[in-house]
Length: 223
Image 1: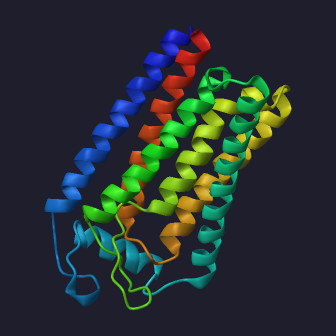
Image 2: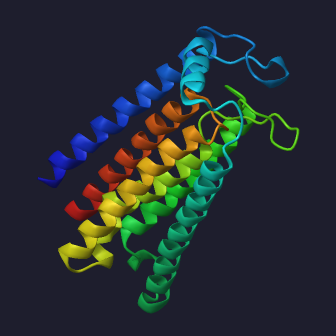
């Protein structure tokens, strides 16, 4: 059963990764127009400008911007708690090898998320639709969306079963974290600091990482 779940998760992860790569290439080369600040070029410009016009996000929406920033901090706090949990296991069990493998894989994926952030800060696909402090910054994919989606998504996909013995708290926190992921996706789009394609790209990449992590969890549980 775990082997089937692992294969299923791997397949989903590969599918979303391929979709992300194809979507990124599309954003890079299709309908590129200088519609951004300082005449910066934006891929899928017609789609992005239409969505932005429909949502009425001509500038920064302070409420949604603050809300999504706080959600980002909340995700970092959850990641810190999982790191603390692993540290406690390491100390109490007196061996790094005895730390739950699900946690070890989680830390590996945290590093991958940071690596993705650094990569797209250097390899710029699109820049923000607004200037922040007079600076034009890279915006694809949305790093805040990726942060919340991956950290909360991996929490749902993996280690809740070890932390919570009963089913009730696991289900409650899974629904809560799932809701927060949706709030971040919608809120980051409405904040006005991202193009529509930034959010879509982030969702595709994050879904891929969470699915790959789920495959690792299934492998651990099989072992």
